[in-house]
Length: 638
Image: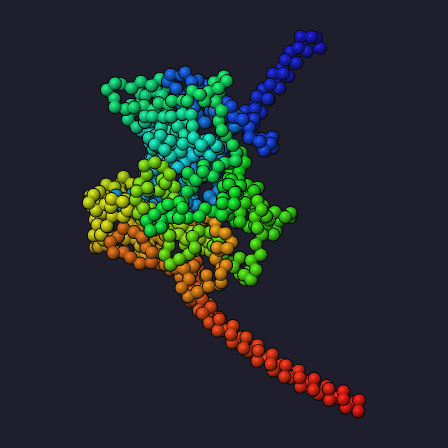
């Protein structure tokens, strides 16, 4: 082999090796597989803008004019494979290949003008509808719920919308990328809900700017809503005749350091405040929602954080913590991240109970049947059951935490959520739930029901429900039965074949008979929508049964015999259902069993008296036996 051939061979080998390294780097980036150190890496990195198609992203400098918003996909994606993160639980709802898992809180579209509160989800949870069924395109979905979404998922489908108008607007708004800072930023300046923060930017459809606006070193003004289709955010120009104010980002120049890189205060140890923005709950006590009226979850009060239990790796496949979760996904920590996994875990090959100093309960004196029929949360989670359920608001349903939301002013705002409702869950265990009564207009064809899109509904309800009938506090309007009949008549022209328009509210299905007269009947389609709760967890000293069995087993116990009031807009529609009707247990048996506890104190007295009598009789015969034995012994001696 001559020297030239050797040189060419070596050069080819080097090229192939370099190509292999490049391919490996593309497949696995430096941030995808941490080296195991518990220290937090310093994130002093260049901020990168959203790149043009087929081009590399450009670095953002403090003197740029115009200053472009940084892109998390480009900036964070330089070290972390972005497409892997998108498979995480917070972002994968639109992926039909992902197991739905246990029912969780749906997105609830509540609209008083359409007398509607309807559960929506991109996951195939029973009882929910897909947003597109009621006319919610990706952009309209974000208008309603994007305020408390971390981006990704449906937020990155704006440019793929079935709506041509939205596809065009996507050139201006951009997609709503995953906002890594929403969870991982430890800076106290992380802004999610203020008048210029993340949520408001999403409401203004400033999707491209939302992540930047949430950071502590950027401020965004303006909005995309009124901008012309020709607007280019890289070369912004708006006619002086236009009233539109395009989004403008201003960076704190002091945030830029050496090489004009920026230090992000990023950590995998996520603060509970980051979780709270999307997952807060507040109960309504006599019209008040002050935080000091409620105690925090015992785990958080003891010093744990949300991610101590809700763990995930780089794939962001976060554990949800319910007992059957290991069967629903491949998260290796799922089995150890439930209540039983931390506190009991008796079936483990190695001792695992007592994680994070969790006490191992003995449950002394509790019959084993309780653990076969009840979840841990039945006794330990949510408010103590009373005769009346607790009205509550959540961040996802009511937008609490976002500046300017109506929830701050109106405590009766839709949707109306109540809890704790003790009902049988998907796993067959009685579990506390949150509950609301769906209300919506739909076309019914046999057993199939399809909700009307909201534009069609509003066109029909607007002709019947006048503004004067609408509540100032965004609660239910006073809907008369004759109003329902008129609206259903108006909706009849939007159905085909054998289908007929119906209205569902408070457990009833309203429809028109062949004579055009309104009829109503209870229907399982109109059943309340429920999802299990786990928080807030009460300490063991406040768990059900800690005082006596009558905490649950009494003739008027809220656990079995509490009332769940019907909730809906139909005038005069009142009533309730009993808690036990949702538990699939025998009411007669439970009632008689509860009555047995009324007489148990007397039974104990009778039992003690009987025991004393029996003991006296046994003592008498023992003495007689001793007497005869003594006589025999004395007789033998004499």
